[in-house]
Amino acid sequence: QVQLVESGGGLVQPGGSLNVSCAASGSIFSVNVMGWYRQAPGKQRELVASITGGGWTNYADSVKGRFTLSRDYARNTVYLQMNSLKPEDTAVYYCNADIKPRRYDPRTSYWGQGTQVTVSS
Image (cartoon, rainbow, N blue to C red; front, side):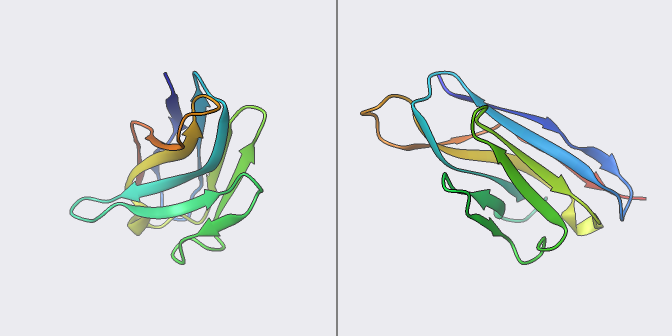
């Protein structure tokens, strides 16, 4: 069984920083894209940042220059460093990963349980 375990998040003042991480564990043959999405109250879930198996990163325009996504391939873990946080960054952040549990399984999208990030004074 594949699991995405998230950690980090919490409450921070505007202009502050937070780091969230996500580790994929369980029966894993390969991991392709990993990334973070977020969903604010009353809004649709949106992509924050993603990183491919080859290291290509993609960021939402709203976080470019403020957020940095990195990946530890050996540990199947991604880290999202969030700087210069704004109140509009407040949301539940969800980890996502495209994983093949076994060699001949299809690639499947898995989600973490979500972690709350609140930016408020």
